[in-house]
Length: 111
Length: 112
Image 1: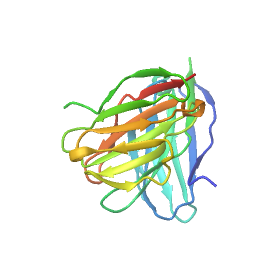
Image 2 (image 1 turned 90 degrees about the horizontal axis):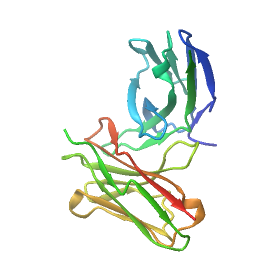
Image 3 (image 1 turned 45 degrees about the vertical axis):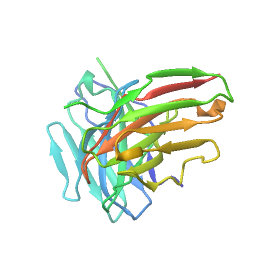
Image 4 (image 1 turned 30 degrees about the horizontal axis):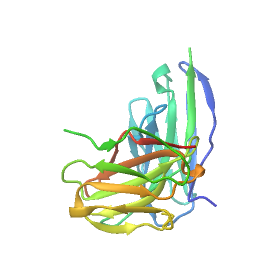
């Protein structure tokens, strides 16, 4: 079983739609979580961190449920520019943080 | 601020040949990662350095892959000999302590 699992999609949604991505993790050593965004043929870039209390950044909301080992990302009012692959990432604690990536969920926002 | 630099951007080699990739992390970043990303998959960690020491190389195919980070700054990743299944994008990333990891643009390797 992979340490971080995501629904690969693809998700095709119309502009303005709300879309949610889910991610589960199996490694209890993962203490911190992130969502990275990767555009086609580009490098991954940090989108946002994920906290147990939930956090919001504009149209993006991330949530962590440690009891269920589940992470989510909600995108409201989707824009064409949101089209990308969204990578769920677990990080171990310690001075040398180790990052484990999921396989990514592909999103296409349609006009 | 300069980002993570990688070279070359693209490389095409025949199977059984050797290839080397170079990475220059962001100045001052102690942690350096090499990831392999096969098309349609997420990045897979090959090796992680903390300064010039190896933190994790459990997924590095050591019979053909090697990496070093001399003086705790630049790093090179080598494949010798290459196989067809090594075709992928090789991503280098660096981070400062426990902060965000910044990625380079990657080296796209095609083994024919």
